[in-house]
Image 1 (tube, helix red, strand yellow):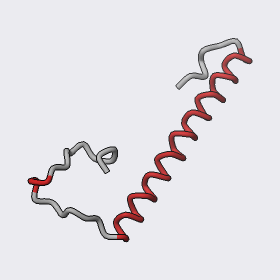
Image 2 (cartoon, helix red, strand yellow; image 1 turned 180 degrees about the horizontal axis):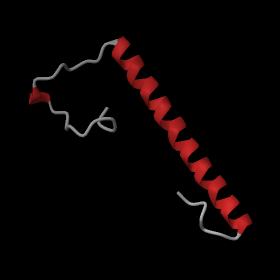
Image 3 (cartoon, helix red, strand yellow; image 1 turned 30 degrees about the vertical axis):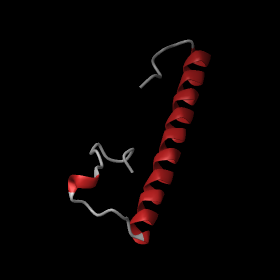
Image 4 (cartoon, helix red, strand yellow; image 1 turned 90 degrees about the vertical axis):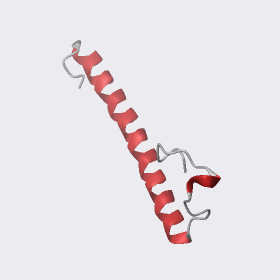
Length: 62
């Protein structure tokens, strides 16, 4: 869970020690969305690089 939040998890933090199945499902859904978003961003950047190279210009970079 630490990859989704900047907080450090520790036994003495007073937070629950387990995550319910509904919350786990939501967390997994967020993780899948994050992976798809990163892949899409990489694809878009590659496409923009390709079109800029074809045009012979750097104007297409965002």
